[in-house]
Amino acid sequence: MGRDLAQPQRDAMAKVKKQPRPKAETPKGFRDYFGAEVTERQEMLAKIAEVYHRYGFDPLETSAVETVEALGKFLPDVDRPNEGVFAWQEEDGGWLALRYDMTAPLARVAAQFRNDLPSPYRRYTMGPVWRNEKPGPGRFRQFYQCDADTVGAGSVAADAEICAMLAETLEAVGIKRGDYIIRVNNRKVLNGVMEVAGLSGDEKEAERGIVLRAIDKLDRLGEEGVRALLGDGRKDESGDFTKGAGLGPAQSETVLAFLSAKGADGAATCDRLRQIVSDSEIGRNGVAELEEIAALLDAQGFGPDRIVIDPSVVRGLGYYTGPVYEAELTFEITGDDGKPRQFGSVAGGGRYDDLVKRFTGQEVPATGISIGVDRLLAALRTTGRIGGTAEGPVIVTVMDRDRMADYQSMAATLRAAGIRAEVYLGNPKNFGNQLKYADKRQSPVAVIQGSDEAARGVVQLKDLILGAKIAKEASLEEWKAQPAQVEVPLSDLVAQVRAILDRHS
Image (tube, rainbow, N blue to C red):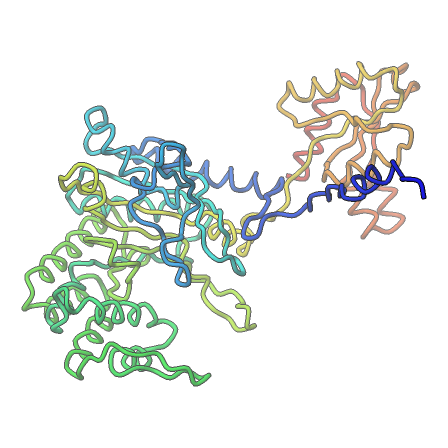
């Protein structure tokens, strides 16, 4: 039998596998933002920046990438400790990571440029952050934050100012007064409560952690649920048991008294807190700071209808060193379970006097706020302040291919007048497709000019918004009385288009 010389070549070809096409899909935990979403975010951030600027804060843009040392610690995912950031190793052995918040980069900047920056340094920043956590419903690995911080001011006047600015910011973007409340607490007061309850010292760190988590569940579990977690533990409806802090009755009552200390106004709340922490110096100092904040805010006209002293605010108290604050939207929405609930928190912050110290060795006081941009946008959509759609450009249609220069000139005239416009650049053969394109672009007006209109120096303007409304709702008589397409002189193009836009704005 003769040897088949072509066999090895055929075998080699058989082994070469065709490269599969990549899947067109967004990575898990990430999302894409389209037209209206991007526009609405930009407009909202511009309003926020205007308030921050008015308060004397300067913009700062830091690198999206920091050294792992500068970040200081990872945001832990409960199931994967110390893997909370997207990090990679450089050739020199050092590790870099995408920023997981805006505060760690600020601490690095404040330390690196401390001889050049004014002190106090007031900055605001806006942009995406990345967290390498397990994604879930409404929980993404990339999201936007909007922060404002004051570095180098030890006075609680800086904290009061942040709270006042936050209130003005919420109202500036469209959250009505009465639909939000900013709640203020103080880490020092809680430290005093822990001291009075016999929970101070390193050996009590585990118990303090359980107490903090229990306090944070007050809204969901109520007083009895928290009492159980402060004691031996709690069994939920499914039968799962959560181990408690193991506090005695007297210790639990001290913590619960702290949680229920909120009075009719700031003064009454502070009076109750002072009684609870009377044996703790740090606790008394914390109450004095809350009183000063309340007085400063009252002097500026920010009463308890907007900002209140509320001991139930925990807000990661292990991170903060003094006052903490949280902005909560109080209007009701329908939850995933179909039951009404309050919208909840959209911003939070507080005083963190130890963060810059990591770089300089010296304590540098700092305080700031972070707004959850996506949460606030969702709130504005819920209240109807923004609609999730954006008006498209005026579409100049193409009737004659060889007159493209004329159509481009019309679009340029509209743009020069500040009107968003574009020429249809697809295949102009089918005019119906041009109108379908305009519809998909949510265009308010289509400009039409064939050779006959060009010879007479006129254009047809098709009011697409009115046309859609007439097609859906109007009777034949109404349709005749309110035509959606009109002929106007070319010289009146800008004025007539603007009149249509104004009619629908």
